[in-house]
Image 1 (tube, rainbow, N blue to C red):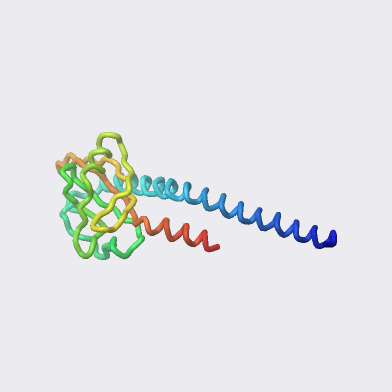
Image 2: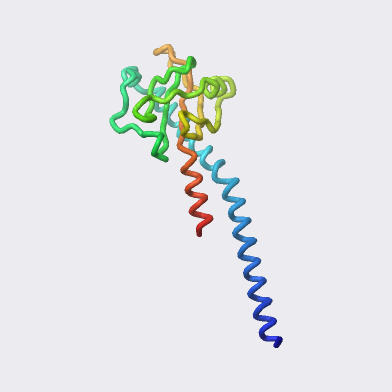
Length: 165
């Protein structure tokens, strides 16, 4: 084989291996970083909601549902829920098949005790990533947590798009 062909073949192999290695490293980095980034975003959203709700009028906690609730069964949008220490959902922007979802009491308890909580939970077969911060409204007799969350499908779709590219 001529030297030109050998050099061309060598260059093609080196380039191919480099591209594959780059893709594998980029996928590994994204797979590790994406959930952490989403947790930071959800924690900030929960903290912001907690601050806003601390200043909200007591009438905002009458249990009425929002006009356009997010259905967790088919949406990747973010949602907010205010959950009392006993697990009662006081307010939420999310529904699951038309009903208010029940959040695990362990998330609320951990948020109250540790100052924050983050977990992946499953509610009626829908997997969600949630972050919670403690919430107290003494004028309402409410001690619980503000939970911000979104479907895990969101991160999976982003990673699948990156892998496709």
